[in-house]
Every structure is written in structure tokens, then in C-alpha cells.
Amino acid sequence: MSLINGLPAHVLLVHVVVVLVPLTALALVAAALWPRAARRLGPLLPLLALAALVSVPLTTQAGEWLERHVDDDALVRRHTELGDGLLPWVLGLFVLATVVWWVGRRASAEAARPGGTRWSGLPVRIVVGVLSVAVAAGAVVDVYRIGDSGAKAAWHDAFSKTATGGRGE
Image (cartoon, rainbow, N blue to C red; front, side):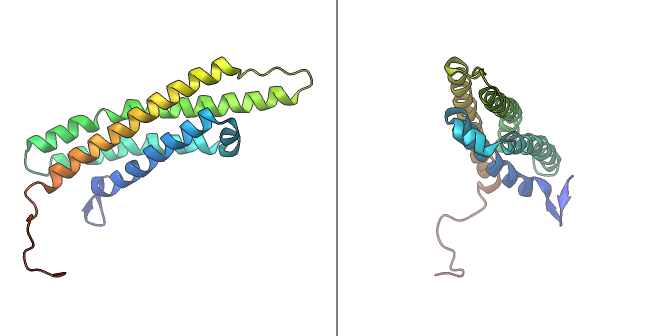
């Protein structure tokens, strides 16, 4: 996928990543730290994480196409390098979202059985919670850094810092 309605696909797909990754990170942390949120989100949590996971390589591939169609620039190269590092973070979000969903589902099933034990005891919840917060924070920070570098690459020297006398004055 290189163009959408005549525009480079990357400039459109990037908005999907910028929304889905932080939203997934927030939902993951809420579900990992608050079992009631995990029950309410149910399978939506790993599905949201899967959508974020799929969107990253699509956006990266479209970005690589765009990189071949713009002038060689250090800011573009920096943005590309940073963009290549997002996939492991989002893969971590997906794995943890699946674990949180599965543990919550298993705990509900075990608690419902007569004499059932709670498989997702406090130690498991603590480990999953700490990992979820760490991976979510890493993913969100990485999205911010990539987006900031992309904005600098796209907009440096592309506008005047003083008004040019156009509309809106």
C-alpha cells in the first residue's frame, strides 16, 4: 500500500498507530491493575492490541515507500530508525493483553467452580501489572519520539515563523 486517494498512505496510517497504541497501552494497564476492568474489556483487549500490532508494520511499510520518494535527509533517516523500533513494544502490548485476558478468564472460571482456586493470585497479578506498566510506558514514549521526529522531518523549513499576510490576520 503506497497511496490512498492520491496521498502517501503513511501520512494517513500513522494516525491509526498514534491512536491505537496509546489506547491499547491505557486499556492494558487498566485491565492489568484492575480486575473489574479486565472482565469488562474481555476479548476486546487482545483484539485492540492485535489491531495496533497489525497497524505498525503496515504503517512502517508505507513509510519505507514514502522514504524512497522524498529527498534524502538526516531527519527522515532518524525518523525511519526510530520507527523500526516500535514493533517490539507493540508486540509486547499484544502478548501482555492476551495474558491479562486469559488470566482474567481463567480466574473467573476457577472462582465459579465449587471449591475452585484463584489461579491469578496476587503474585501473578503483580508481575503482570509491573510488566504491563513498563511495556505500556515504553510503547507510548516510543510513539511520542517517533511522532516528534516525523513532524520535524516533515515540517522543518516548511513554514514561516512569522505571519506572511495570508488569511486569518
